[in-house]
Image (cartoon, rainbow, N blue to C red; front, side, top):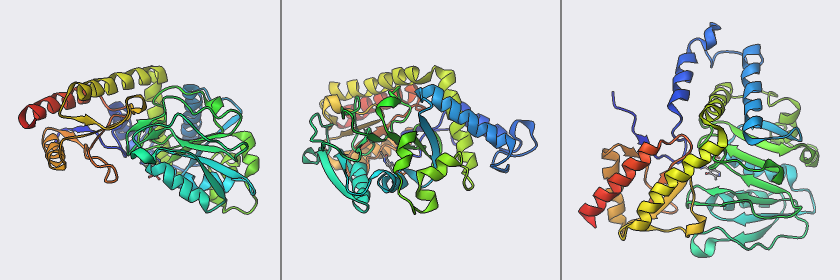
Length: 359
Ligand code: PMP
């Protein structure tokens, strides 16, 4: 059998091995209940406990107060691109969007179907290679939407944009739980699980409860946040297996030392890679220094031909998933919470070797 490789995939992405082992052990007989984890009712006591524990662990990790609900939805972050404006873009109001990349643009395009939008900042002028520092927010927008980490381009907000009293809505799909954030600054945070939190198929929404009152009457039942809030996300059959795995990832983060430790590791790993890039004349980091992502490290080589060769040879060396997104090109190393430091060290060593042979 082939050994596990270092998996730099942008998502679905590498999961912690101890979590995978626990999941494997519970597939056939969950905690000796006689039932496999995928085979039990989502309304039974066993699953009820799994969901409640996942909720309380997430509350503890992120410091989520009772003013907020945690909702478990499907349809990925893309469905949130629609649900956010459907529920929060009150008639007659305009929503501010900060356009820092492909995903932010897609979120805005979806909002336009349901109301007015306004671009408070865009970094398209320099191919989304930086995070804006100036914004032209509306006086009283329905909300301000931003993407905390731009998976495709490799940029990341070091901290939330200062929006004053405006409601902040964040697509945190690719940096959820990578460090502590102050949830009180946000009206709503959403994140697809498949990068830092678990397998694809479940999306976590953290919403301040008073915002639930904004949803207009008559929304399709599963596109109304109230349906999830009123029914503990169990209006219909929740993807129970996914919730279970995400819950195990939360437990793993806690065991490893919580979000402070995740941040320490992420800074250390990204630091190793960026230092190697900065020290080289061959590799070309294409993101402004103060906008660099801790999650997705992007860079170019002197030619596309060399980039192709790099990806191919890296794969033969057990370093998988380094090809950049088709929109951005180049190389992208996704190094989420569960990605091991040893994998980053292996990549740095490979890069030095590749440069000495091709530089
Ligand atoms: N937002 C961001 C920041 C993403 O990285 C992605 C997926 N890579 C999406 C949204 C879309 O997520 P999904 O495929 O879960 O709809």
